[in-house]
Length: 478
Image (spheres, rainbow, N blue to C red):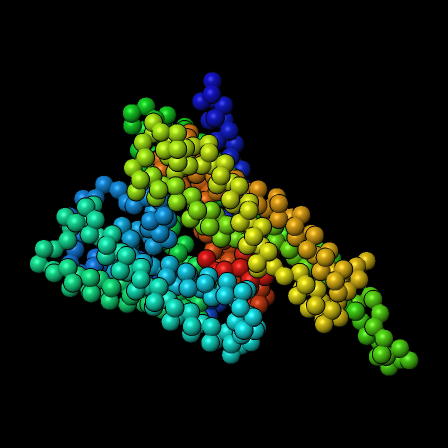
């Protein structure tokens, strides 16, 4: 009975998909290819992405790749998240094992320094100052890379990787060469990201992270399909049901990323050539202020995950047993499928969403900019009342955005409870899909801008594609 109902539902979805305007899609692809500049940017981006993916499979000197391939699984916890951002290069002991994470860490540090240190904040508002900050970020990236590379050498000497080390390499030589190669690899990946941003399409650093994350999707799909068709896993129908839920999750993440609250805005109009030439009157052009429902992006989930990795670390070092009350509670917190883990995870995501939004969103500065640009919100006095009004609206829309973000964060744990494999369940929300969806929307937005500038139709019939950076005040690029 259930199979018949599911087959009818699946057949209905297939029929609906056949109505998709394939002709419109083909025409859009032709328009994209006909624009020489856009075609060169896309091909340049694909070429550099291919270079990055090839480098992810080049093993560090002093490690036997044949023995390394016999490893059963990759790292878990914080290192698992690191490995996901690096596209699996971390577990392969690749020359790009650290990826762009040192650069991301240095960028976040400089952004937070701009919030805390007034001199840095002043530099961020000037073009020359931003160039200086970018240079400081590069120097800090080298320092962070050296520290992380030293820690990675210790990780490679753990019992899990020790059999793959070449005995002829002395410990000092292995330490020195690994730090040099990893530092050079990270700087090269950072250079690739900057070149993609300058001469390619989209934000280079974000695209490199997204490619690394989505590179695991085909393998995860194969593993999930095999698990459902071997040993009574439920068969093809259960697998198709999971695919439909996965598509629904992606649609929900798109809505979360693009959701905005529009505040109406008026620009004053100056009358010229009359006795009232010095007076501004209302009735000028109308516009709106788009406030994002999720202006904090993926940062709250990353912060919450970093906090929740602490219990797992304590359990691992202290050797707590499940029999003890404290040990059982700590193990529950370190288990992504447990109730207490997901509850604390959701609370931390909501708290960090408000915290990070407060850091990057300044309603007073926005109200001052509106006043300087001779614009105002209808019915609201300029200055402090405008700042209070914008702040109140932002607080109200942040709550549903934080709740939806928390739900997206705990969905992978919920999916694993329903028998989804660990690899595929990580794509049911969480950090991976939020970054993937956001970066794809940003890239499609840039492609659509090229089409509209040359008087072609956009990629959608209704409305325009909005990326994460369309309305985000100063969110970190990830």
